[in-house]
Image (cartoon, rainbow, N blue to C red; front, side, top):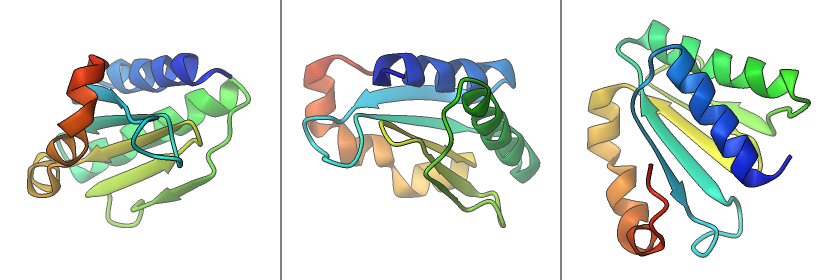
Length: 115
């Protein structure tokens, strides 16, 4: 599956369960590990886990299996690595503390891929 289509699948899965503040960033020029990062918030640990589970389920339905996941035990920040797309799903306080958007946004804003 092309990375743009996979990114849309992830964003749609997050929207389906009412993920908050969803953004995507094209990081292909900054990282050799992935092309896109999708960041979203859940309202509680249970919501974060449900969002991650939905992303994983929707991707598996399309034949895309995660390369790995991290953080499911505590569900404050769950990372779903899909290869070309990495999803970061977290609680608002965790997102604010780590501020991934600012960290990766330095060159991404110029590419105009934030959504």
